[in-house]
Amino acid sequence: MNQNFRSKTMLNSAIAAILMAVTLPALAAGIPSSPEGTVRAVAEGLADRHPEILWQALPPTYQQDITELTHAFAERMDPAVWEAAFGLGSRTAGLLRDKKDIILSSSMLKAAGEEHEKVEGGWDEMVDLLDSFFASGVSSLDTMKTIDWEKYLATTGRDLMNLAAERSKADGDDTFDREFTQKLLQTKIEVISSEGDSATLRMTAPDEEPEDMQLTRVEGRWVPNDMAEDWDQNVAEARQKLSEVTDEEIQQGSMQAMMMIGMVDGVLAELETVETAEEFELAIQGLLGPFLGGMMGPGEEEPFEPDPMDDADGR
Image (cartoon, rainbow, N blue to C red; front, side, top):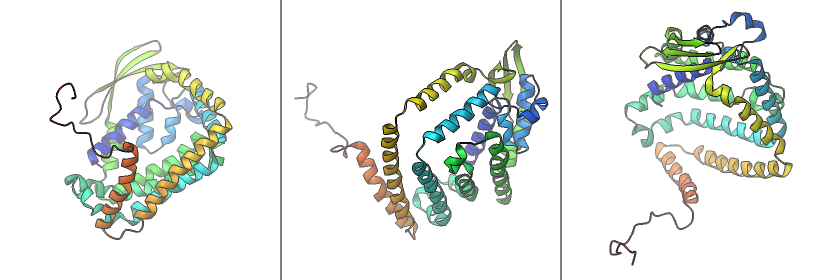
């Protein structure tokens, strides 16, 4: 993955997440009431590897909605599908770790040129993060039924950030600190306008173009305008879908999900047997062929080419 793209994506995601934060009860007094103060406080919290700060500037109602929807989803989800999906994710991480040299030496990745070195540099970090995530509390539906997102972010979330930072430092080119931590701390925040419950901030990160963000105050917390405008409708629709889904629909969806998981499991089983880059490439080609053919449908394997002798009327 392009390192600059990866770091820029991390930064943009973090800045966006800043505006989705809610103050924990114990920290509520420490979050400024101004829009720029809120953004700066959350930026500093993230830079200090405290992702629980993301649960801080959301209005209490939003926090409650997220928690209730998570618990309701976990109650309706098929445990077998959830367990199989996370098992598949963990197995994929293992494949990426065990077959690292084979995959990186394949012509598919070598064709990336200079980007190949950047992918290789971030490979171990990516695998470590995948391992940790798929082994975390969210891998259990029982945990999801009672999950406290504040605690999850303060523990697992912080552990993941620390792991990413440590791996980045160990690789010699501390991208995490340079492109994430330092940019968050050095981002300039300007108030373009602020009146009543509306405000516009201009965020200017080092070496980035300025980005204006429009905020709305809800229950004393500042959130993006589009979030405030769509929140109630989106939550209502999600609740309605969860309440209306039938046991038959859940069973049918579970069967389809397990079929797909079984197909992917077969793909992983095949890739786990390869010993060379050439075998890896042949396996990928052989495995993708049926998938692509199925997507195209019968009789569509070859693109249609009109007969040059046909006239404009198709005769």
